Amino acid sequence: MRHFINYELGILQISGKKLLGKTDKAYEISNQCNKILACCIIYYNTSILSELLAKAEAANDEVLCSQIKRFSPVAWQHINLLGNFEFRHTDNVIDIQDVTKFAVENSINTKTTESPLN
Figure (tube, rainbow, N blue to C red):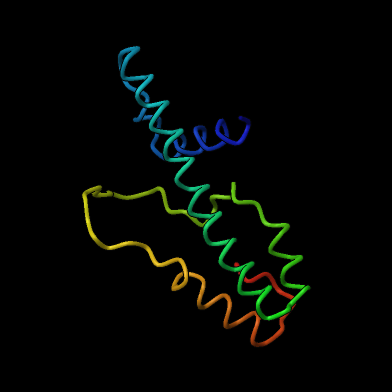
């Protein structure tokens, strides 16, 4: 629960508290939207970490596996919450394997001890 509060505070800080709403109903909708956004970020991060871990395990890279297991899917420093976003139905799906390709190639193939997400 603490992590959702941190997300909500971060989202409010970034938005200049414009997402609060002026009525009780609007405020509640805003809170629920913030929770949905937090869940989406955590799911996205979990998908990336799972893919990285699977590839590190396939390469038998125990050091990298250990590092990946220490990452938190709750992190959101790498998520851009600024700007204008358009939400619409599209058939384009984020390819998590493509997202992790660079990190995997640069960490597993070189056997580096640095974090693959740096």
